[in-house]
Length: 152
Image (tube, rainbow, N blue to C red; front, top):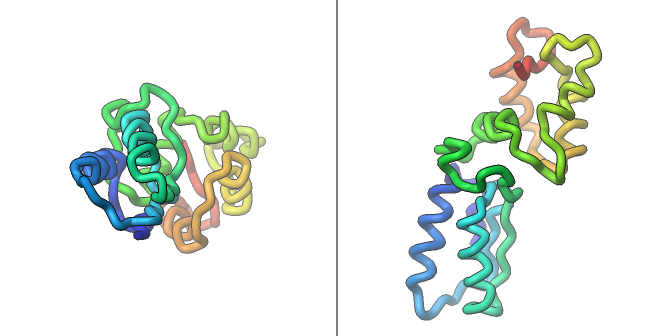
């Protein structure tokens, strides 16, 4: 069962898990949600599922590491722009804060990077996204139509 491309938030995923947790019998073998970030509460439910349903394989997105609650990051959607908001909120991915990585690429300190630098920054923090999502972000944050993402 693949829900990774659905526009679901961390809070929505938690509620989904709460409903699944009420189930006595589950026929699911794979649950894929690789683009949906999980918080501490979701991770606790995932661990309980793994104990109760040993044949269930769960693949999830990055784990949010700050206050570890959806209230701390105010995430209400699963779109790429919401992910950018999470990244700007000092969430760590693979031990790195995304804005700090972008600032390393921003040698002129203008608050902007080109699309290649942005893509490379995503690779450094271990966040993989499709070209269409990056292109959508470029269209939203390219203030002057010059191929630059203004992240500040």
